[in-house]
Amino acid sequence: MTRHFLRDDDLSPSEQREVLDLAARMKQDRFSERPLEGPQSAAIFFDKTSTRTRFSFAAGVADLGGNPIIVNPGEAQLGAKESISDTAKVLSRMVSLIVWRTHTHAGLEEMAENATVPVINSLSDDFHPCQILADLQTIREQKGELQGLTAAYLGDAANNMGHSYLLGFATAGMHIRVAGPAGFHPRADIIADAEKIAAETGGSVTVLTDPAEAVAGADAVITDTWVSMGQEAEKAERIATFGAYRVTPELMAGAKGDAIFLHCLPAYREYEVAPEVIDGPQSVVWDEAENRLHAQKALMAWLLKESK
Ligand code: CP
Ligand code: NVA
Image 1 (cartoon, rainbow, N blue to C red):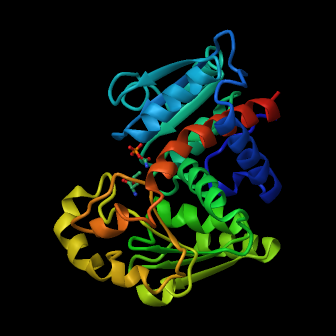
Image 2 (cartoon, rainbow, N blue to C red):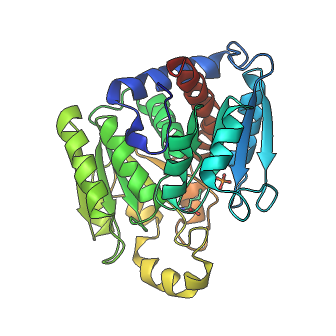
Image 3 (tube, rainbow, N blue to C red):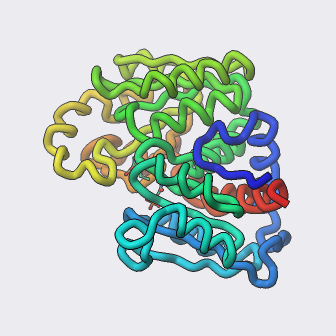
């Protein structure tokens, strides 16, 4: 059966652990595994801009012995001239993987339904599961074990990162707290899915409004941009709405003394995080960015193995 990775809960807790273990091994020995030797190709579509995702997938596919084919907005027939399902059928005859950063999550589901090769969500409006694998790898490097740790995510809890933290961290058996203003809490069905997972893994899910309550005693404090790609028209309004969720040294002081700070990047030091935090000793954002490479290589290798 072809395996896809569209949402964080497409990996079971034990599968997520397997991918993270493989990611750690691949980080130790970067060029050891070459499942795309041939080279086999990967189609990598971008409907939105990117730095980390673009370079980590391109470099990652090359590290695995493969050939990355990057497609920028407007360069393929997909969308304007050709359906998602026809694209999926054609590409499945030519490439070994399809990676897609897009707007509507339903488009990814349609791609996966019609593809016979693994489809990976490299960010949709609703989820960013590749980023969460890199975050988990980073937290594990810093803290040893994931099970039982508490993470606080602040700001836009209704965006792709908020949703993916709920599902991915619950899968890892962590206590995930998200805090955002009224109207920016995660989708109810995703909260329910995460709660179900947490009940099995021993984790927990808490949705809050007060940032200080979320951060209290946490092992990791996390934020994201207040203005996601596609929301640029709402910028002024959003900056006013999320002001109280800025991660400052004062807010960080409420977390554990050895708490770490994560941000998927790109970061805005004038808005969601103070420079003293993101550029300070508790920040692990550069390891987090690097781990996109290792985590995604492990994911690709694992999906190819499982789809055989
Ligand atoms: N974090 C992340 O996905 O970065 P890019 O948008 O630069 O790919
Ligand atoms: N929430 C952000 C994540 C960027 C990696 C966005 O969608 O723009």
